[in-house]
Image (cartoon, rainbow, N blue to C red):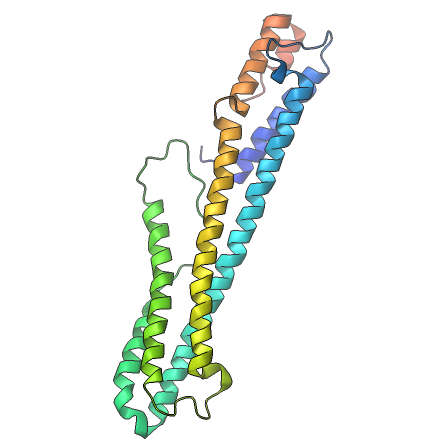
Length: 243
């Protein structure tokens, strides 16, 4: 079953159910490993709650950055069409049309997918998967758009008088600032994606690593079976709780 945010939430809920059950056992549940005692296990679950929140926060930050970057690209492509139209509108700039058009056509030809969160790595996912190259290809597209924006700017800057009388947001200075913002956005999104990956790794360790949730829940069941017996009411109460 693919791991998802809901998967983590469901597993944590089942762990809370197990913790609530052992907390109410009489006589009290006293496992050989003190970290499995109800109070200690409850604190551990609180830590997993914190990990879930950290992932959700990092994911929201990535989404915000990726959406803002997409908006910059949309704006740059629209302004590119306007800049090309301005060059075409002046017969005196006819010699510059081919260079500007070539840069504009290439820039507008780059396709970028709608921002989608990086996929949660799956436990059985092989080292090389289609998902990673797809993500890298998407990042390269944004980097290429930024680079092609620089090429367009270079072509426009060779046109004497292009900025004179141009709309403020269409001057080479304004377009240069927009291209610079895209470069900064590329770096920001990459950083947010790394932060998301880091928080996911911490969470994965807490749930599935050595001494993580799965291991602890199994050990608690073993501890209950040992203390109260295979046929005890206590063990039968928690036996069906999935790990």
